[in-house]
Length: 311
Image (tube, rainbow, N blue to C red):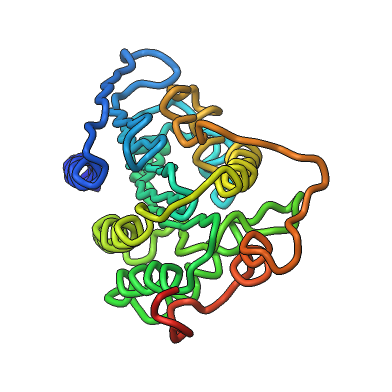
């Protein structure tokens, strides 16, 4: 295990992504470095990069963290019960972007490495990550582009990975209490250890490197669209689903809170303005209703042909 190589890559990835987002927004991201002293429940360091009130991004963050702890939290041992109680090391980059314009989707991306360090045995490493798109107003062209970039990032590692990781994403980002998807998915994988350290590290590099190509063309295409109070109101309503998922189901959020992580960094994924309504549904035939009927359901986006190039 070469944890220094992973750390170096993740910090460089964070900087590369932030630089591109700053160029798209025209405003700088705040930098907030932090560290935990040795000897506590959790030790390590990190760098939070955040923008609020930008010209494109209403709120967004790209966090790097590298922590070590004495006991793996329950959220990290769901599929590896034999490692319960082992010390651990974890590092990753996680980002969420909430644009102003309701026609620009929210996006999430994460790449990470975990290592359990059982007493008297070798380190057990595994990797995880992915990216997913949460539109408020659906555009087939955007969905197809995002999913194709995700698919292409996985091609070098086996044709079977994209169908598997896409289905995993559709299943993972599903609000069971609402019986609806959070967005239109992308790819998601966790506890990936096939091929050992080198193969897992190569996979998260490919996914991390694909993010800007997957998302920035959509931002550039949609951020100038005119919108009004109706669109912003629907955006705020759908953001409520994002909050519900992150606080109830998201393993990364639960891991951070259970392990005693830095709350400000963990909750940077929360949108700045949110609304809830009682038993509300969009009127049939509206663009808001089309999000539910046409987009918030699993589709093989990467293999579909655009019905109209302007969509």
